[in-house]
Length: 257
Length: 161
Image 1: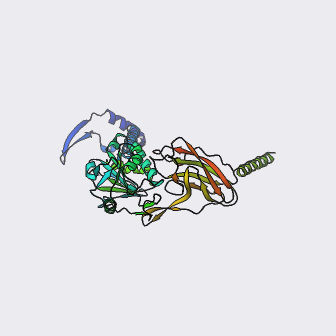
Image 2 (image 1 turned 90 degrees about the horizontal axis):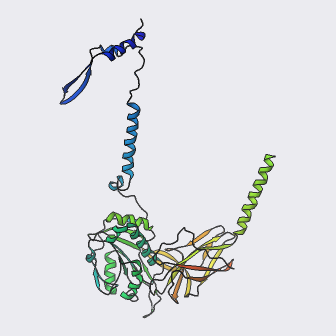
């Protein structure tokens, strides 16, 4: 008889062989190992039919694919891998922390005095403008309101400060009318020319009031247009250039909450 | 027969496209809007989109708005890190081009509003073009606190020459 013809018979007899599972200690590990008293070469008869595909292969691969899929899904979900990777670069967003800024005290739109430290515990959004500004200031205020809206109840711990650098025309009255339509989390601030110059300098903000005759009401004010994102401890963490989509602004605020 | 059929379909398509372009010839003004005034804010701004469907460039030379003491074309220029608003002499709209007036860029500046712009109201705005002449649009006033319409289709004003 040829070895090839013998093989099925040998395997058949192997199946009927009693076997013992022997546990033995090897390098500190208990290993289970199946022993038969069949000679090894009975399993590897030359020319024997190829060993059958193990029955666990297909379910095993399916299970592996499932586990891999779930793992990738968990990592890609917001707060998954994104939580420990640096956030993607966004045009117009500068991330610090910055050493500029710091404590200040100005007159608020209710006529009282407000310090930055009074808002400690909140994320503060600060920007410089003026109420005669018809374009940039109202659209930035609207953008901030949209960003706060998307943050939902987390947005409760955010305060937006609109600092007017035009003290000649903007008193608390004007600021109140300009800022309060955006909601209770918006605060208008102003002060004396000297106070404002000091605050702007501390934040690296620039502004320039167009020269005008005393009492004139129709001059313009050029101003730098960054929104400063200040964390709950009072540190400027992010500067966002005007024109950045409000969705990106909301993402930056959310990271500080 | 099939090739003749295709020719006719192609000819029809070309004629249809040509007629569409002909209809769009010249300047059209779309999606005008303005933000409602905040309090007694003295100034306002209006935004819109200019589309030149014609074969020659045109220029927007001036604007008139009865709601304001003075209306001007304005732009923002970055100057030493500051945004400086300045008057824009004229807005060129090349043949086939679209120019958008939007917050932070080109806009119609309304100086000395006679009354605050109320959300939900409309006001007339006359645009004076070098070639197309005067086009009047009706500008809807949107909530001050809302989003800019952006790419959304607003209430396009009907061009009137």
